Amino acid sequence: MLKQQLNLKLSQKLSPQQIQLMKLIQLPTQAFEQRIKEELEENPALEDGKLESEDEYEEDFSNAESDDDYDNETIETEIDVDEYLSDDEIPSYRLQANNYSADDDEKSVPYASGTSFTQYLKTQLSTLRFNDNEQEIADFLVGSIDESGYLRRELQDVVDDLAFTQNIYTDEKTVENVLKKVQALDPAGVGARSLQECLLLQLDRREPTKAVQLATDMLDRSFDLFSKKHYTKLLSRHDISEDELREAIDVIEHLNPKPGGSYSGNTRIVEHVIPDFTIKIVDGDLELSLNGRNAPQMHVSRDYSDMLKGYKESKEKTKDQKDAVMFIKQKLDSAKWFIEAIKQRQQTLMVTMSSIMNYQKEYFLTGDERNLRPMILKDIADEIGMDVSTVSRVANSKYVDTPYGTKLIKEFFSESMKNDQGEDVSTREIKKILEMSIEEENKKKPLTDEKLAKVLKDKGYPIARRTVAKYREQLDIPVARLRKEI
Image (tube, rainbow, N blue to C red):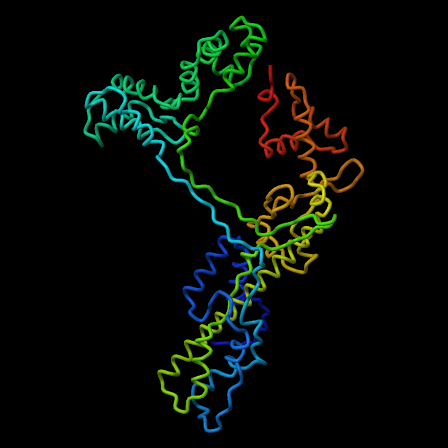
């Protein structure tokens, strides 16, 4: 038996416009410009650039005379054309966005092009003497070298690939002989199969001084001890003094662990960061500005307003005209909303960043990370009366140009911890103190995590050894043993 019942349910849903607004807020400057370009291509009712005459534009949206004889059952019952032609309903400021600053110059970054690293090596092969078989093996080996200059494959795998892909049947010994010739190419160390071999290849080209010979012997016989900085064992095994060891280490430290990176013709895709905001110190006060590329000049097409005006004044309205007006209505709705969304995006970005700037005012005035206050997303969201997710969208993908460099906004957010006086301090402040403590330590006897915890406690930051280890790893600082110097 069917039962009918009445339920009262309260739900909240985001409209498509709100969803798209959230997506616009999340976009950084470059992606935002691409989004505008896509919208201009998709919506013919939306145009960019400055209008020739604002008075002419407002005239296009002037009130039309009403038509008493107009059939109420026509398309106007579904579309209020006056909505798009009335000054009262559509103020001109809602139909355009003209926010470029006079000093906002559009700057382009040139990209260099040149010979690739692989082609550079193959060019050098022409100076060596090979038979036909060896030439093909050499080409294959050069093509297998990565951008760092290493051959990260076993020779047997190379032999197998030559047989299956190049129809060249050879053996490991032949490939190794060809590889030795390839390793004679520039830059020094290219074609190495390991870091140890790479460094030894570079030392082979150095003048055989006593320090170079000792460095070669150390890398050849005691590479594991050297990489782990067991200096005491190195002194004993090679029967040398600390001064001799220091000289040998200095030679090794001047070698290039990635020879491919030294090739000046290497072209890599570099992501250029465009700051979304700029903070300047003017007469002791902070001044915030939004990148002008986030405030494009946009307006609704005059041609589309003319179409609506002509439709309003037309006595006879055909089905094709009605369909055209429906299309125009959709495009005008989309264009007007997009312009409004851009304005809301600008306002949201400025309000959020202004709140962050004021919250961290002491840091922006001094540039000292120890002055960063503990700040989480909810602190800013409560202050500006917005949702935490909105603040997160602004912080996660936007950059700000400060007097101390370009920073990712989310870097200004940090958790808080209690110091010995019970005050809340930022974890960024503790990390900065930790980093400074490590810089000031005696490198011959670097501080362990336990000793670092004691140092921080003496400075008023009582944190555990495990927390010190976590912060040290986040700062990309190695353990005490690997920080040791002779």
